[in-house]
Length: 165
Image (tube, rainbow, N blue to C red; front, side, top):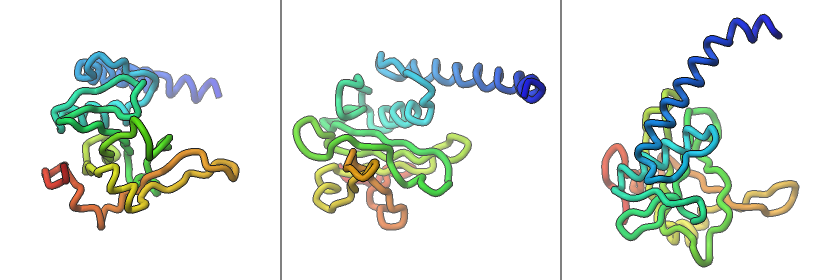
């Protein structure tokens, strides 16, 4: 193990330095929100959402991530093309006070470039039963949203602006 670790050490140092450089650059656009952990895909999603929609990133105390044009937008981002890229991470609640008004799904290619971004009206997706219960050990824990790339073209807002309000 030590020999492999030693051979990879320089590569890991490069990755760590590059990761930190990316975090610092994205932090410049984060509206004062601290970019915590090693969540580069999520950071990119939130910053790109803010820039695309002309909004502001909000603190983690909200159910949404970005405010833009009177909308409260939950941002979910995925990278790559392996199975599961169309599925969001857990969404704690879908109805009630303080729920977002929109869901923005950001799909990044393997090289972190943007493939597409979809902007969904939250209440429409609730009405269409697009949020699915996420079961954990037999109990409902949260909700998951699935993007349907072929059926959801009307919600695409990037690369071309063609989505709903």
